[in-house]
Length: 259
Length: 322
Image 1 (cartoon, one colour):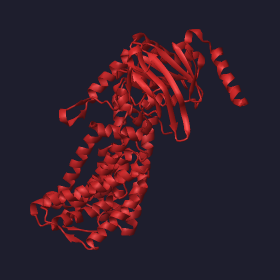
Image 2 (cartoon, chains in turn orange, brown):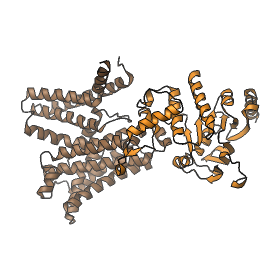
Image 3 (cartoon, chains in turn orange, green):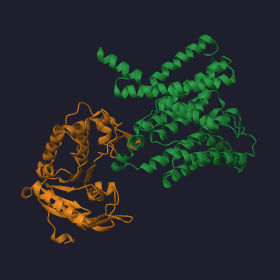
Image 4 (cartoon, rainbow over the protein chains, first blue to last red):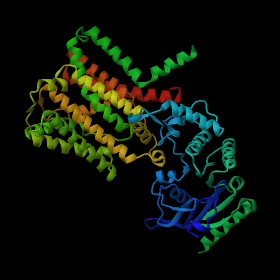
């Protein structure tokens, strides 16, 4: 399985038996997963189930204690955020990784600024403004001016900026950490539309962490349930109901109480 | 028309603008109260008083923006001329001796940065320790006595001997550091770190490198300002600079709108803040105010300016102060 020969040609990223320990705490106890291009995988689970740790390993923020990662069927070591980005992996974190005091375009280009002036390597503010506005327009996000400070935007707008930034940087594997958390119905609707538009492009694999079962089943093609650092259930959204998921979680909860 | 008014209001609300207006009013007041204020001799004195704090502010502002501070920069200020002296007595030509002094200053900044970042010590503590350490080194090297400076007339003139040399250096430093802050990635990343360190880290900003770099920068600028001062005065004084000049530098930055909590600030603000402090100090000196009362007035002025700026900043952000 782990050699490239028998791989699915549409596979974008695969993790095999990932273990992550922080000192004596085991955050992930052998997690395997796979996502194809154009597919959206939802990862569900309670706080502390290991969802965020898994995402941080896929983005190169943490390194796995054991296990292997494959991008396009090839083994990769993601030693840093920059390395993961080199493989087309982009993440929109729960905190959105936005700097409130900086403008929209500075946020969109943070760490991949456009430069001019040859060896002087000066920031090309004008070009960054122009391209940021274009990138937002392309994915259908309406903001009056890219010079606005991010701190002045609504939660939905901030989320859209973070997604636009990831897409603009040619993300082929887009990781979304709780994209709908703390969002009103209308804002959540805008983000769901945005994810739909990205899915229709067909070239991006999306991995989404979420809490809300019904919403996740609606948005994602496939879901994966994590509990105590392990994957306890996996299935296609079309054949799964929120009630079924809830029952699995309850069963687990009762079992934990008995033991 | 409404748009123009809005723009004028936005400009006036910029911290630099309010400080410029207050400084202009102070200059007018001192000139009316004492006609010698706008005289060639006094402008020269004022420029010399302003130069060192402004150079130091240019470094401290970078540190404050990324939520750090260097309390020991005034001691590096005093040490640098003595390091140059060591270079000279070892037979180095003066320009190389100057470079040696700057290099040692930079290394002190590097040590501060590595201790602060590597051992996760707040820079307030690291640099407090460094303050005593460097001061002790200066006193040991100098044995507590002032030392002569090289008698190269041209070099001395360029390095601060000529009346306006020091302020020209300060303006050049401000110009360069303004470009670093506003037009280089270094500056953008410094602001990002101060604004949201987690976000900066997740975006891949090299937080440690930037912070250590800003410590090196501040120490080097402190050493440079100390060299200029020694050349101007004509001797190296082991008691020069110290915490006084460091606080003047930090106060210049904060008066000019740099947020003490990080994430925002301007180098030009440090220049106008330094000028305002200089005008106050110089003006009251000309008026012959008692030295004891003098510090009360300066202290109150600094407090007032900082409080005003914090509230102006809130106003700018949130619309109405009321």
